[in-house]
Image (tube, rainbow, N blue to C red; front, side):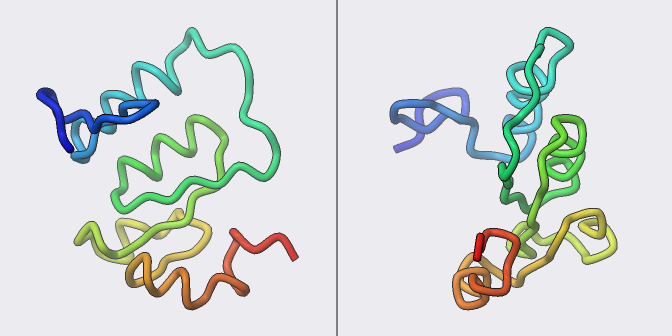
Length: 100
């Protein structure tokens, strides 16, 4: 259930709308204070150019979903683009998420 400020409840509250998520990532994940790099094999799923920009700054591979309403041109820097999360699941064995 969303909480005030666009955060979802749970063990690790992360903003649920795109603008709040970008600000959260900028402040908490890709800030200059970040000293470690993400581990190999880390993949991010996003649906906006802001997600792609954040993943690039964090040196994380990103897979995009068209569910955010952005054009393929706007999402072109993603490793792969899927129509929806359901499409990604259907194509999982051929996606960057599949390790085998």
